[in-house]
Amino acid sequence: MTTLDNRPNTALLVIDVQVGVVENAFEREIVVTNIGNLVERGTTRTCPRYLVSTLTSIW
Image 1 (cartoon, one colour):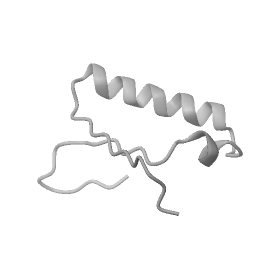
Image 2 (cartoon, rainbow, N blue to C red):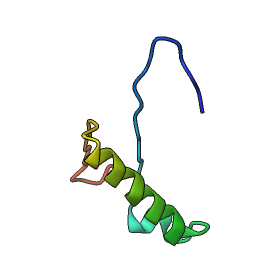
Image 3 (cartoon, helix red, strand yellow):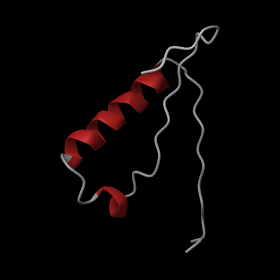
């Protein structure tokens, strides 16, 4: 974890947790559960949340 001077805020960045991406990940259920818990904590604390969605494949 990095601590930066003059930056008192925190952020949670979750990148690509689609089924196909994490289906063979180590301890997948634990990781996905932890991500869900962190997102829920951010929601209950009214932290800013952003959704970026790609509706078409770039591949």
